[in-house]
Amino acid sequence: MESTTGHRPPGPVTGTRRGPWLAARLATIALVVSAIAGVLRAILAMGHYEHRIDVVAHGNTDPVLPALMAYELLDHVLPRGMASTAGEQLSLLASLVAAAAFIIWLHQARRAAGRLGGALEWAPGWWASVLITVLLNGLIRLYGVATSDGGVLEKTALDMRIVAYPLWTAGAVAIVVTAYLTVRVMRRITEAQRSRSRQGRTT
Image 1 (tube, rainbow, N blue to C red):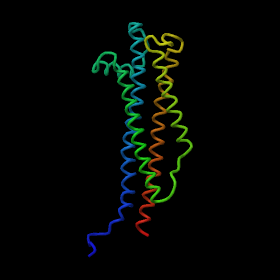
Image 2: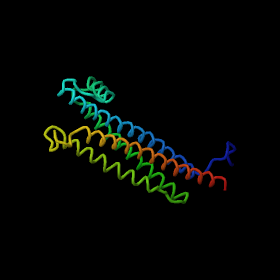
Image 3: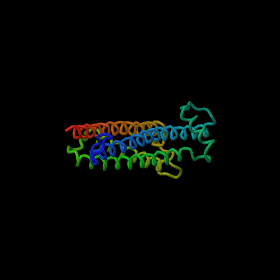
Image 4: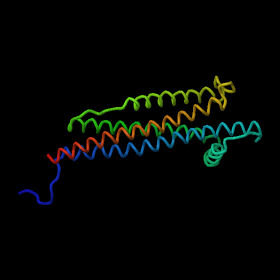
């Protein structure tokens, strides 16, 4: 005897509809957090630099006040000197979580594509943004090591605002742009698969 409680789509279609959609939502949240953490890392790095200048110059500086205030606020909460390190670690952790969430979504989307048909289409600009973000933020981490206490670039011409601030800013912008483009790609692919799923239920 058939159920009269309503018509349900076949199991594979339901799984296809929900799997990539849920994974895309979680990946989107992770990417947004990663973008925020990337911006916070840049702000705290600038604040730490301003703090170093302020200590040496005894306050006779023209500081980037928002960055300095953010750093000093967090420096009072965390163990002294750990604010910029916390920003680095938070950004790294958020990036790793976002990457893992994206990989999970990609696995789900590929499975859905195999059942529904159609290939996953990637915009060339997305690949370029990912590559630039990885290379730029890798350079930032190397720069941080090189300009730290005892580093080969410490107190050299490269350990200056004119070099550090544009580099940190570019790294944060790259993370934000890549997160935005990734969310757009996931949304476009997921919506296309949901559309195919609905079409399959109506045929």
